Length: 510
Image 1 (cartoon, rainbow, N blue to C red):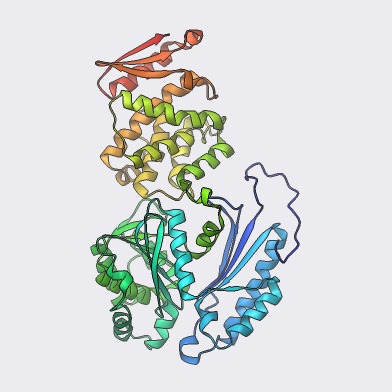
Image 2: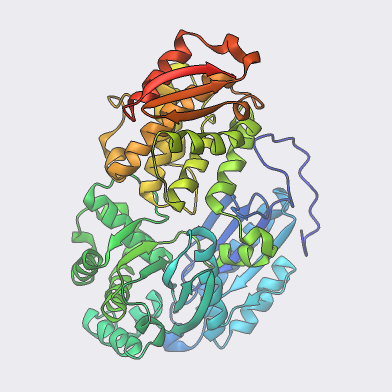
């Protein structure tokens, strides 16, 4: 570990991927101090450990200009614990970040010296523009082709920055963090609203966001989204890329800002430590919507920390598709043959084309990801593989995919195991996907059922076979040396596949 000297863990852990060893980030924010340890440096870093302490380091800075002594003591105790955890986890590299509270307080340098004494590392004190840039990097790392404004709301500040075509535009910082706003408004909603309106009135970044997405980052906004999910009875409790139409988000924020938090329906979905800041986060988001006029609000679970790791990647790794990269990793960890999983993408693409299915670029990447994930449930009991695969995929730690896309991946792999039956699928998961995606999930599932009857789940056979369309006939072509594979079960599955496109099935040798 840089500055630590810990040794490599000696335990063999086949459920983890090899690489640069665990990487840790200690993130010292105005509201929380957090440790996240990631499995390794990669395009889709997987957290091994995640812990936070709501120290409230920024509380009082706006009025006294100093970090509160009690909050400093709590923060340093947490950092001591984090340092010890990193040593026993075999962390190879550690990064220590500090943001608005330490940046704005007169005793911030003294506090950072104490942090350095504990960690052995000089903390990186991020400026407002640098914090905005890394937040935008987090959005780039976790959302496929983002186009909009990224906004990171912390305890001390708000950063907004334009993100489009893989590039980060201009950024702005405002002193509108939840803790700061609570203090300077004397805990008065009307006064807080006036402060936010005045601060955002001349924002050049927000002025360029009309009709585009707003990517919301930060714990308070995640709590707002969690409350919105619970009130709607939303079926998927995954925060990343949860989206709300801007008009609906506006009404919701207005309601939260003007009601006592404890009186809100489903408030138990939000931790008690977060509830006091909900009205201020709602006020800021409401005024952002009024100024920017976005099309939708999209939650990003990735922010400054993930943005830093993404920024440190080689350029060629940055261009990788995060969904495909994560799906390949899961195929390596859980499938019988990762090579076979890779073969399925090109093969199913040609099969669906022969059936007359057209695909958008995004549908193509979803199909490839579904193929990579098609065998991750094989160790489950045969009667439950479809259900287990559906749950593993719909609730998996994937990025670069929205919730309808998650539903497609899960449904395709359910159909691959269970056949084209819907009785045991939760109707709520189906509700997340469009009719078009459900149709394609059924077709892919049926194609995969054919593929596994040919391959026995092993690599090398599938590329030697193909589907052809001749008029209204769908033909599976096998090589002569694989003639013995033809049997009643394979014939039934080819027939089932052909029915999906109203074609006549056939199997031939060449």
